Image 1: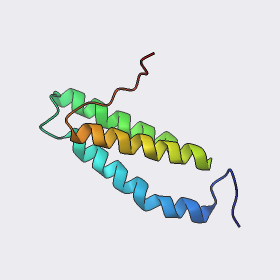
Image 2: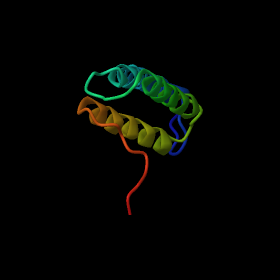
Image 3: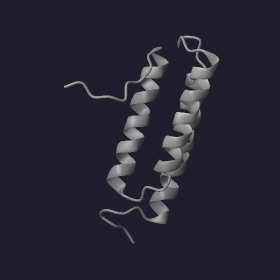
Image 4: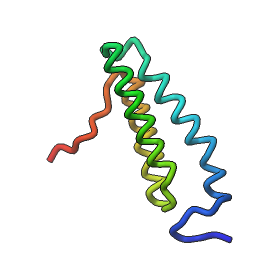
Length: 91
């Protein structure tokens, strides 16, 4: 059965591989020598990623899950360029 708003178990299972891969890539990217971060800063950023994924794992809305995946992919692209993703919006 498909739902318009809420994730079904089948859809959640389909996203599982992508989310785990994204999680691992983000944690690895934080260790990149391109980023000028101290050891404590790296640990703090990793804890931040873990917290985001922990709270994101409870999300059941299709649209929110898709937004979280897009945000993670954007953050990964920024990290690969040696930039730290900014979580504030400039107006």
